[in-house]
Length: 104
Image (cartoon, rainbow, N blue to C red; front, top):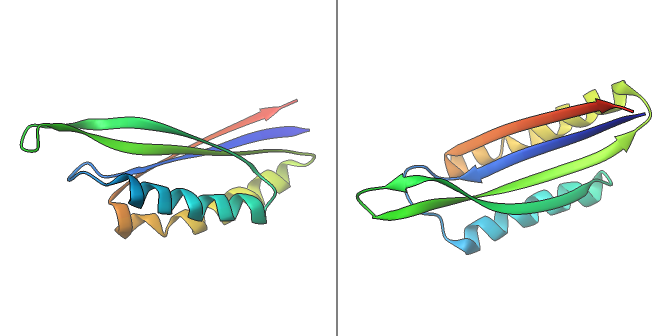
């Protein structure tokens, strides 16, 4: 058995993104999670501080995880998730992927 966690941080390091936009992006990832039977969790994070705006730029880290029997299943799901999240590239200007795979 393998467990994997795919985390994506979405947000902007150039200008503040409002919570409504972050929530819209979360709902998009929630739809992906329900399609592929993934557990989902979210956590707000600070991406940095901008002197001009004098405020922190917040982002949203969303983790999608699942336990599977074969490594190939992990590989296939990761390809789907990466392709799905390419949607964020132009939309929110900042994206980080983190993948953790554990053999049980």
